[in-house]
Image 1 (cartoon, helix red, strand yellow):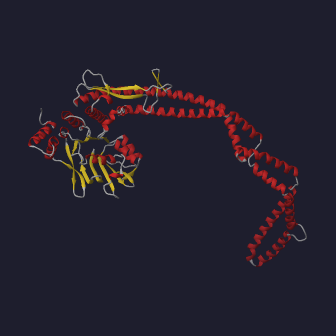
Image 2 (tube, one colour):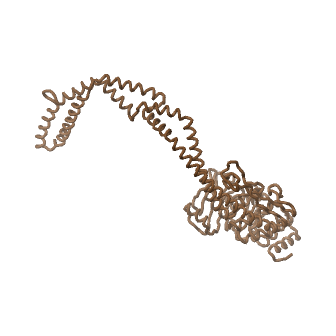
Image 3 (cartoon, one colour):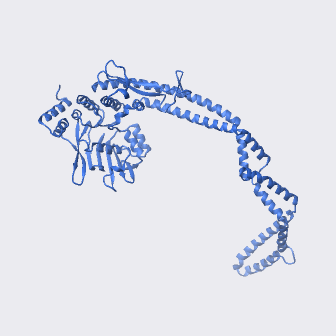
Length: 570
């Protein structure tokens, strides 16, 4: 239940705070007074799109805040848990709009806008001025029917299987593309693989080839330089090794006298070890050096063989090896592809069979629910002054050649919401066959059908709050009285806020609010006033006779209210 609405710096509203109670709350006011602005602000709280144009003061921010007393449901509890929100009996939803963007809060915790909307969808059904026009669009009829709770799990199961079938079909499609591509280029791939295999490429060949060629090209220089190193280190009358040994003896004598030389002795000994290793390596290296023109020529020939291959494929050796392996894998996968395609085909056929069964179950539950809805709508329309109505929910199958779904030997389209279109048919005249609602119903009839549907689903979904913004469009005074009575009855199961211009509907108010607009030389403001009993009578009289309220209109208003409350019987 909505207990409080607070609005600040929103369009014509400077600051507004209003309390609400259970039952039927009627909101009236002259055209342009700002009734729809209040509803727009509340809509913003429920997560709808916010326009920065609503900010009253440039550079400031518009605020809309609603406090609701709520009861725990499984869906609400899940939403709170998923978004790490603390549960409170009183829920505060707030929206702030700045020129730079908007922010949303749940119990003072910042949340994404979609979270605000998800929570709002579980608490409020807001029927705008033009929402009844949805009934004139056939593609919206399914949404009304699927509001029955029994349909939701069956639809979810169907959509789960549909997604499974789509996933398998996508895999199959991609595999078929790969198979087709492979077959189109199989000859080319085999030629390329043969060419690359014949080249006998190996990892790091290019680097090793260059390295060996450098060594062979510089064999004489390497031998000369290595010989000099060997000679200095270990050949001749006095070698570096000899000098280091002599130096080591002298340092050992010094260390015995002064330990300050100990570090240098240690470093010298390390140097001797390194020099010894150098000598052994140099001697071994000299043994390996060879002058081999034949080997050098072979290497150059190999280099000449590789360069055209690299140029042709615009790749280095490592990339050529990768290409060779990839081609080999592609060509060896031909048989594997066939096996995988056969496997996916079986999986897809199985998924389509399951999907067909799920679609059939969905059709059956919709048909049963449609019959139930038809009966309830006719009953509600009778209460709203359409005594001889006939209302039908028809399911039209969407045929498709080679469709995924087969029901009773018919191939059908696997749509997101099933195989059938849902259409409402109505007859409001005795003896006339039902015709499509979107083509035959008048504006007043559409309004009453919408109210009938809202009344039915308010009880079905157990929504705590319903808001009607001028649902009485196109209906007469006599019918308005029936609409008011229906709303009063509906308000026994949920809280209702209704904006109306009809005195007959206003007379049924448990609580009456009036929206007024005041103007000064520099400013215009919208306020909302809660009316007492006398003011309630006067406002109903004003709706009947206009600004000039007569004694007769006052008496008529009193009588209308007494009748609405059951204090006077006609």
